[in-house]
Image (tube, rainbow, N blue to C red; front, side, top):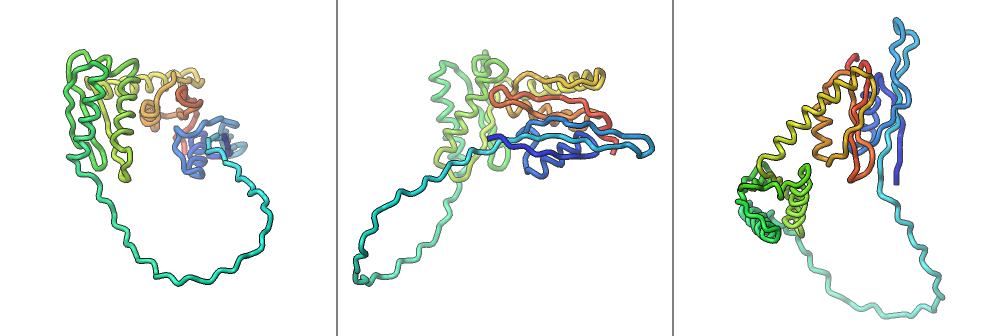
Length: 254
């Protein structure tokens, strides 16, 4: 179910930020429509704030069923039965799996998956950070593992995360790369972001990018967060969610 709020600010970016703070969401989780652009006025006269409409999605409410009416029956008296007090059970926290056990689960799953795909690759596992594991698939001609714009690699990463975290209380994030694809893609996205932003400022019109996954949209947002006169937001639904690079004059004037 879609909901929306309106917010104002000294600039379009400030208005969007005010809305995000109220909702407790990040920019990629909402769609933004600029209702009124900010006006600077002259010597402080005639100025007006920017106004935006921020749309976000919330889970649909499940209607509660009304209990069916039942025929009243006469109460039956029962003698109370003495019972022993219930024993006190102390909750014992389940320790998280050791790093070696997690790495073995990742390697076992990927080994079987690669065999099913008919692809040979060395699986190199390195603990990246707390609660995270970085996996590099090494070998020759691994294009089949990457797929069009990394779609296959993203699917492998998603399946691995699901398999490793199934039944676990403490989740671990598994990052998977092949042929240094993600670093190359990130640099390509940064160049694209700056190129598009320059066009937006020059022609003073918004540009909507092609559909991207959440990680790629995040790279665009992060690359342009300090770019003068430009704001970014996402619109649409997965898998066709897109990033919009919008003109916002005077974004950093306050």
